[in-house]
Image: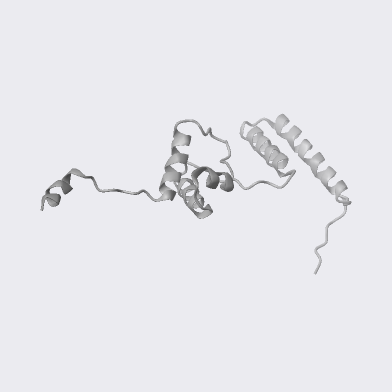
Length: 133
């Protein structure tokens, strides 16, 4: 009988799911500034080893934080594409500023890159490409 009266002194044990603990740790790193904007997260394998959890336990928090806009997921661009993206951004920025000279310079650089790419592929830009049936 005496055991029933003392039960009230203990708090209920609440065990947080592992994915929530991983999510909280990543969120804390972002909010505290340990993980700066634009910095890539460690690989899934590295996170698994760090937290001592399975891969699915790491993927869930990444998905949750992506859905709350704390993380952005960027797929790695094929080699050379990043240069095209930079050119496109610079052209658009110049056009938005109504800076025709700068836009023309970037368009010229972009066209030179295309010509080099065509040449490396053994193609001639003046020849029309024909779709195969």
